[in-house]
Length: 436
Image: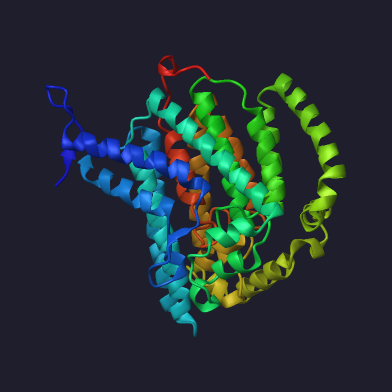
């Protein structure tokens, strides 16, 4: 039974008010937990459903939110919520398309498609929960501290694992071994690749977490009326470089440039400092990093197909396959089909959406992003950092499925949903906030 969020005359909070407080606290823990997104529980029918701390906290907060009555806060939040619901329905229909074609690997396709639905449920739940919170200045100040902590620990984890695989081996020792059991997690603790940090087995996800946490910290500082924060951009650049993700490094560079353009004078000093550090770093530290430096240097010659790690062949294969079958071009091959039919994801968000949901899905997703960007631009100057980060994410989607609910990118989309819900919640009375 639902209860409304009210206060008793004597000042004692009602059960609903306590549930609201628990939900708010849970979302704060969710933010802080973004620095450690390795599975805590290796339980369930598949490694795709192994629960991390952010997952467990999200379910707890959502449950608390479901037990009391409170409408979504702003008109913008309600508009985007309707768009998200529409995408959720479209995803279920796209899962049903798998039965239309009844491919030989239908059972495996269904598992990956079901995971995409599972991730969509998480996105819907966190946006709905966060859109019903009261974002007071005191709450935002606490979250600013938690977000900074998550950002620093995430970047520190990337730096540490760049030079030593021992932390990865230690942190992942509780995970079951065996490729048939642990899937890609097998490579995480087996090869102990540098720059993965404590987030997951995919370099792209690691870089995305750095960018999103940096944007969250900067957004909270802006909303609380606190200036500065250029060090966050600087650390984010270093961390994305060390993450080994070329797409995220380019996206982060775009994000940093757009962010610095907002403050020309500070941008000049920051650019000069970054330039000097970059020159020293590239000539002293980078040569010692070997493969990382060589990999990131290929960005300077992105037109060479050899520097795309086989993506050109994947894109051509998907493009040719769609042209040969007009029905798949129109409605897609079904949610979860790309990995099975082509042996890999599309490594391009547009092609991924086209292959799995067709032109119908691409038009709907495109309309959703138009709505999203429109609402973010209307949210005022404080939302500009989230707009800039989103542009950076869209740049990364040229060579990866940044906004597609796949397995590799862990908690990125739920965290992004939380950030967007917060951004659309309105302005804050900064008189309550303490100075930096």
